[in-house]
Amino acid sequence: MDIPIGPERAGKTVRELLTGEMGYSSNLLKRLKFSENGIRVDGEWVTVRHVLREGEILSLAVEDRPEDVSPYLIPNDLPLEVLYEDEWITAVNKPPDMPAHPSQGHHLDTVANALAYRYRNRVYVFRPVNRLDRDTSGCMLTSNTKDASFKMYAAMTGGRIAKRYLAVLDGIPEERTGALHSYLRRKPDSVIEREECCPDDEGAKPAETRFRVLAEGSGHSLVLCSPVTGRTHQIRVQFAGIGCPVSGDSLYGEASPLIPRHALHSCRTTFPHPATGETMTVTAPLPRDMRILCGAFGLTADFPELPDFDETIPSD
Image (tube, rainbow, N blue to C red; front, side):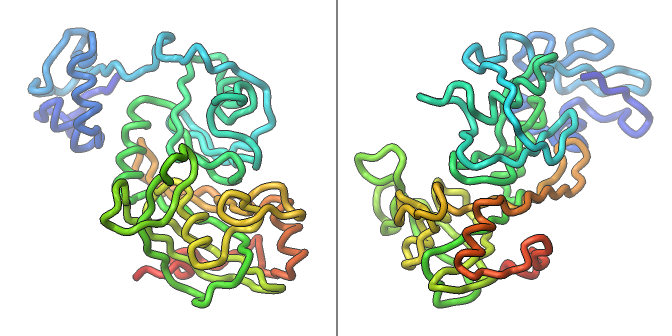
């Protein structure tokens, strides 16, 4: 990456420019410092203490190299809706029953395989920003460059990425709006399953999910929810904990004859663009299987025009 130094950048050190205006993390800066030709000015290696002058060209070795590509990621032409893409970020509408990345038994049918095929004419490294369970559908973000990945990770851990989900529940929460607070940990002797626990239990981590009931009928409900924390299976475990498991969730509730997966959909994600800082929003409409399920239960919320999210999700 080449960065021309104009009058507004002249006089700054490389460190000041990268950690200030460009928002580079200390980890990325450290990686550049210790990479061969990581930081150069006019083709010459410099330290982060170098004071930039007008007319210079600052070059950063942030491009992906062929050796960065996983040899186990096989490009495969799979149908995958792209919600937004540019050189920094790609957002997709992940369908149900598609894993995010390859694993045992899933070597060719993942989001990673589909994106590797889409970007097969360039060096491509799969870098998910948020991972969705295989059966969870909806908005999923991936970073297309090293520096975008570092910035999106910082945004995620800093609470600057807001995720909204729609879930159909077996049951109706007693409160129509509120927040679920508990502690979660991995269930002993299980790699996958999580459980609610006491705060002083080994591995306990606090979890919070805000929610609002949008519709109810036939003993079921449609809720809009926002995970404040990002624990594994958080939404599924916490709603099961109040006696309202996600419909079709055979792990924390019961399988359903009406839908072959848990009825959870990431419908909207808001995030700061890693290059410009502009607030971006991507949305994914409720998929057909969840619409049919809602119809069967008489849940008649206006799906295309959901209420404003900032007003819908409680802030306290």
